[in-house]
Image (tube, rainbow, N blue to C red; front, side, top):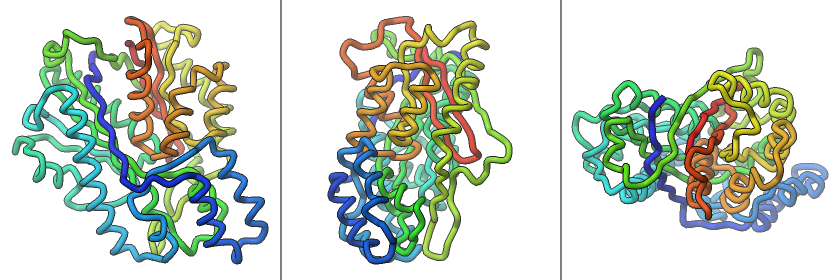
Length: 357
């Protein structure tokens, strides 16, 4: 596969909230309704998160809100965040929206028809014949899947550039009356954000040959049978109720090594040859499961842990924040070294990419 990741842009909402503030707010909301709430709230302290960004002020979440209000907020905030991420991404690559041939838009935390990419077309001056592919429902795996689909597109059309845009407003899915443990766990982890990546085929990438860019060498998708209940949404009258199994870290521990080795073996590589990991930080337990399953040292996952600490789990766009962290590191990854990017999502499924720097 010949696809280059030219640039990555990111954006977060204006409301920056510390983990301790969110913990105290959750205690205030549910303290009289959930027995032993203090014991449950220790997950906030063990999350590995210092702060998160939310699209609404913290006080907004104290009250119940209907689907119509959440939808209107999703369209407004998602379009605004996506626009900022796209402009950041295109500015770094010194290209205009009119240079983009295909846009892939990924989300799982809100619905919009026309989709958010259509809203962007009206704001940013993309060509009228722009190809558009909205993708919904892949959860945390959506960003990795979007990178894979964008890479496959420019392999088929090597003279084209594809723009991947991922926006997640996880906080808008919060249901005030949901007393489940899954809701409390989700509240301790999830946040809002957006990211955009420009992916170029071999013929179009020549314009950026003066600088080095990671190449997507191969991709791999996996879905495990009989695992529909591991992660997802249950549609309720007041919104999307989170499904979040406690078994996710154990699934990572038991299954991810096989998937990574399968991708590497099909490309003539072995795990010790992988120097860089852009793995979705679903939570601290998930990162520890990756570390154990893949025999990694703590430093190998520092980009993922850093993003988790500063932003929380922003679902699909988080992996682009992690990849950006690696590309901005000092020193940058040496030329020719390999990396793995990956995320897990509903299905239950895995999306992996083999990168060469």
